[in-house]
Image 1 (cartoon, rainbow, N blue to C red):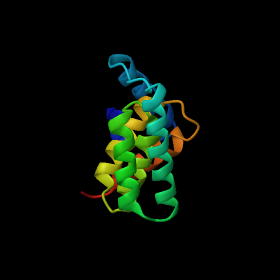
Image 2: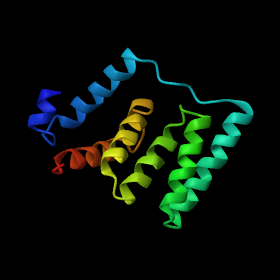
Image 3: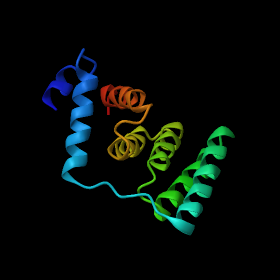
Length: 127
């Protein structure tokens, strides 16, 4: 973690982030996705959130992703959507928290490197 504080975009930063994410997920089990009707209900909330983001209705997106996570805390994409909603509403600290939850649940997601880059940019902003 100290290396990442000193060189957040250094040549081995991406690998260091991956290792940290793996360590975090090894120490605490990630929640599993819901099943059955709960999963279907969470999927519908997720789709409402995606549509609201597409429509630039960020408060509605935020509400939909929050509902999704109340139903299914293990739904990684809902954490990412929540992060995007917060970021677009001018709350990067809350967005970063949601993005970190996304990476904890999906450290090897195809867009994980992009999300880590976004987090590094948030971390470099003055608070």
